[in-house]
Image (cartoon, rainbow, N blue to C red; front, side, top):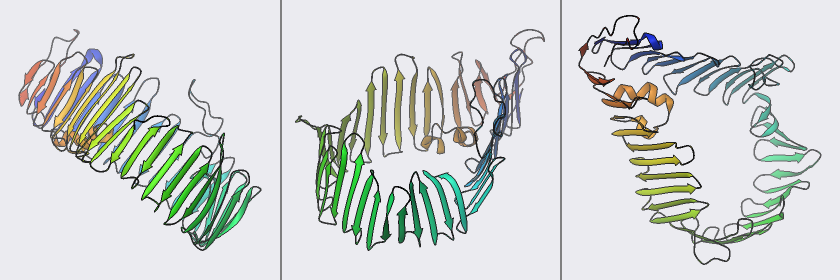
Length: 435
C-alpha cells in the first residue's frame, strides 16, 4: 500500500518481513527475522539485533551521539563524552566469547577533562583535569598522575618514572633504570639503562642521542641545527645538510638508498646494488613509487593520483581527481571471488557495486566523501537522494525517484498511489509493494 508522500507499507508474512515509511525518507521502519531498524532522519537510528547474538544500537544525529547495548557491553558517546560498562569479573559469558575484563567494568569519560573508573576489587578512580588526574594504562604509560596540570605531571613506564614541574620546562627521569634532568630549552640529559640516552644544549640547536635497536645495535644521532644532521650505526647511515636542503641515507635494514634535494619535495629511492629508482618524486608535479607490490603515481598533485596493489590473488586500484572531486576504486580477490567497485563524484554521484549487486544515488553530498560510512548512508544520504537504486539479492533492479514518487520494486513500476492486496492468505508471496 502506498500513498505518496504520506505513507507506504509492504509486508511478507511468509518471511516475517515488514517495511513501512512515512513522510518520504524521514520516517522508516524495517523488520526481518534477524533485525529491526527504525529511522527518524536525520535525528535517530535504532537497530535491534535478534537471534544468537542479540544487541541494540542507536545513532543520534550522527555523528553527534551513539550508544550500544550488548549482553556483555554497554556504551554511550556524546561528542567527547563517553560512558562504558562491562560485566563484573567472573560473570558467565557465552561460549566462544571473550571473558569480561579483569578491571574497571564501569567507565565514564568526558575527554580530556573527566575520567571515572569503578571496580569491585579496585574501588573508584575519579579524575578532573587540570586539577587532579590519576589513571593507569593511559596513552601508552603504565600510570599517569597530575596535580594542577601543568604544575605537576608524573608518567610511569616499566622501571622508569618521569616527573614534570611546570610542564614541559623542568623534568626529571628516575626509577630503577632512569636517570636524567631537563631544563627546557637550555639543557637536558636523559638515560634509560640499556635502551637509550640523549643530551641537548639550547634545543634544537645541539642534540645528541643514542638508541639501542634490537638486533642491530646502537644507533647514534647528531643534530647541529640548522646546518648538519647525521645518523650512524644499527644498519643506517644518513647525512643531512641544511637540515632538508640535501639528504642522503643508506639503510641496510631495508636494503635501500634514498636521496632528497630538498627533502621531502624531490626524493629518489632505490634498492642497494640497483641502478633503477623505485621511488621518484618531484612534488607537486610528478611522483612515482613501486614498493612491495604497491604502485602509486601522481601528476600535478592533487589534480590526479593513482594507487594499485597486486599481491598474489588480491588486486586493488584507486584513481582520484582533485583528491575528493572524483574517485574510482576496485577491489577483487580471486580465491574468494569477492569483488567491489566504487565510483563517486563530489556532490553528484555515488555508485557502489559489490559481488554483482549495485547501490547508489544522485545527488551525493556527504556520502560521496564517506561512501562506506554506515551513519552517513543510513541517516543522511536518503534525505537528499533524489534518485536511488539498489540490486536485490535475486538480481532484480529496484529504484525510486523523488523519494518514492515513482519507483520500481520487485519488477513492478509504481506511481504515487498504489494498492496491492497480494495473493490470498495462506499462500506464499503474500506481499504488498510500495514505492
